[in-house]
Image 1 (cartoon, rainbow, N blue to C red):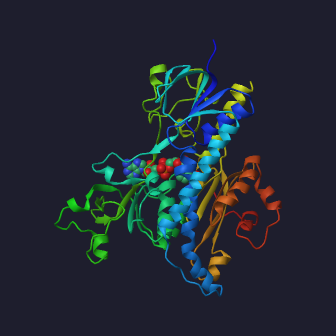
Image 2: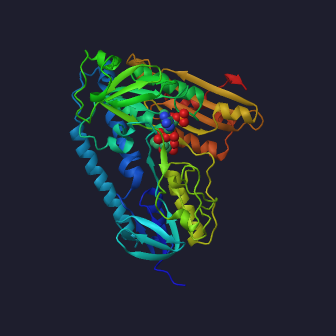
Image 3: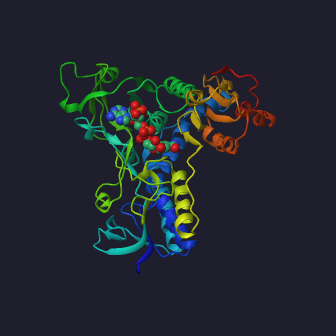
Length: 477
Ligand code: NDP
């Protein structure tokens, strides 16, 4: 049977673009790709890249204080959201252009259209066009979800932040994951009054307890009003808020005035502690769902999980042999570099006859809070459930900010197997922890022992030298 294409990719994000261009450019396949929005996907257009640029923008807020301690006569001027956003938009246009060119230069045919599956080898586009392909790869990613509560539509999600016409004066962020904590720090740095509600006992569930604790402490110390064990009970537009006692603590703090609310209508919130408040914006960072709706998947036998994720095997193959899926739509490890790995393994498996499972073990990652949290491997809590461990840990005030009189603390932690001496986990809370964990991650992935770390001479004076100079365990567990 002959097909229009060897491969039809649905979704032009990090995973889809990588698979398409390597299959076409390096493996010589005839490839098409359909994308209904902008090329580059979540990472480039509404995730990692614009988020990191906002992190950079927000970090300048603390610099004048520090600079003055170092003898500079500087003060902080005003932040222009307009100027930043203009520059950001131009940068995202540039990056999208690069993605489009990469595809074109690899010989991939692209369609700016929504795609759905008609059968195991047929894709139909929103333009009405229909194509057949020997293989179909779904890389449609995910999208932020609002909780299922009345008036949730009054809140915004992370995608909306980059398009706000003006920065809100105050924001309530709901959630305690990566996105909630990163935007709490970013928006606080940009001068927004930030309140954060997390329903559990501590933010960043799944990360090492000590590391989560230090990040939470630092966020509170900087002035983020983080409320644990707290959620929204009810919300409505501030105009419609109950009048009697309806003006909450936050509004009273502003002399009883409701905010101007240029970024959208102010929202009145009553929380589970019984407190009320009015916020210029409510940001839901309450998780992301896979994009699998109305794609014809279940109709042709592609299995979906409880949250709508596509169920795949270790080769990213679905229950329908010609259909594969990679990236966030499979809800395995939802990180750009993982989607790219999955794309490369897919091409290797399908177009180079070299079945390559995806290695999801020991993936380093970073949360870009201030300070950052870098992590690889097991947390202390996970490791001690599995085997006897030693914990090496130090927390201290780093030279740079201590000199400026700031209370900031950093944390360096190694979780070590008593039996094999291998470093099972490394957790760093510090400015630049994302950069540090990338390098520590190589050693941990190679199976380095505590003694291998110890044999490495310290780079002095740095914060990360502590990772090779911790001699005594702080505890056995
Ligand atoms: P997460 O799943 O990490 O966090 C969702 C948060 O929302 C959790 O704290 C969760 O609480 C809370 N939550 C869920 N439902 C409700 C509800 N109904 N009411 C109140 N709170 C609720 O999702 P994110 O959206 O933060 O991030 C999605 C994924 O994107 C991450 O897991 C990560 O893989 C990726 N990402 C990676 C980044 C990086 O590498 N730096 C940056 C941003 C995103 P609970 O803990 O109780 O479930």
